[in-house]
Amino acid sequence: MSYLRRCLPRAITCLFLTGAAACSDGVPAEDARDSGPDATLSVDGGRADDAGMDGGRDAGGAVDDAGGDLAVDAGCPPVGAGSPVSAAGECPGGPSVPSAAGLSLPCCFRESNASRRSAIELRVTSLRLLSPSSIALATTPLVTGLLQQAVDQERLNWVVQLTGACGAVDLRTGAGLRQPSDAFAFAAGSAPTFDGASNPLLRDPDRWDPVDATGTLMAETLDSALVPAVVIPVFRADGERITEFPFRDVSFERWALFDRGTCVGARDTGVAGTGFASGGVVRGFLAIEDVLGIQVDNPPLVGPLCAVLNQSGDFRRECDPASRGTWGVLPDAECGAAGCTAGSCDPGTTCNAWRFAADISAAGVEV
Image (cartoon, rainbow, N blue to C red):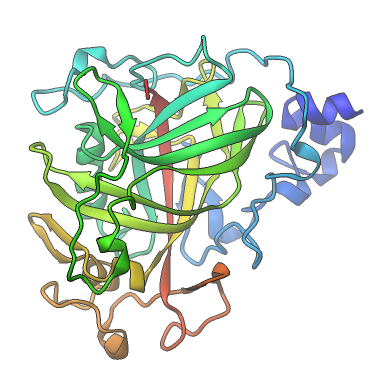
């Protein structure tokens, strides 16, 4: 029975251990975190509607699958190629996409992970924004469009490394800096600093550096423990910074790997906003104090990041938490020294962060 829990796909494990009545889409009922109406699954595996979501975690912030009886000590036998996903359309191309000929279907990967199953390296290839509503694809397609263009042109590079073939894995994630060799390198003390900034993040040259965490990789599905903080910058083609996103309490949820660990999701030019079929979700929080002083300079979107998030209507003014009565999108979570939680604060007074969620796809790269 221990072998079944560790190494067979979750659908089979669920039937053996809990019975069909306790399963939800092949996942044990206690692990079906998003079975409610606020997280309806779309055809591509993403969430069609994430408004009002519970953040996928309890007040303790723990992802259900991280640790516990699913975090095994011994590696599981390889499970093969994973569930195949067909691509629809060609990979991003054109003069603005560097080395476009080096991208391979089905997920537009640059490097296969087939020969390095215990050292998987991935780059996020699409971000279908779900929340906050101020930047979500459903309500503000401009932001998803601008960010997806930066992802396609490898100017926004969110990189994930996994060490360990099955069960408990080590995870490293952060900003990837594109190299002339078409590989990516984690940032290392290279963030620009602003000595007079009131936001301490902007005075820290290491804020883009990678962060280590843990996760669980079972039956080709990755779930991570919380990553306390990660900052992802966006660049112009000339290397100048457009903006950056300082996330807290990030989690990677139900990343379905296939093609021997090389792909999460696949290229599908018919998917509005991103051109990729999603294969997982990333969640986190954007705290007001972290975004203060961060600018967005990507015409036609120009102004303080906080003003973009709060939709006050004045994109020239920095956030003033005391005047949030004029904000179109109020914060819906609370972040503090112990972490971030949602659902227990007052958006008009005590909430100090926005919940972030996005459907993602990812593809193999060399780091």
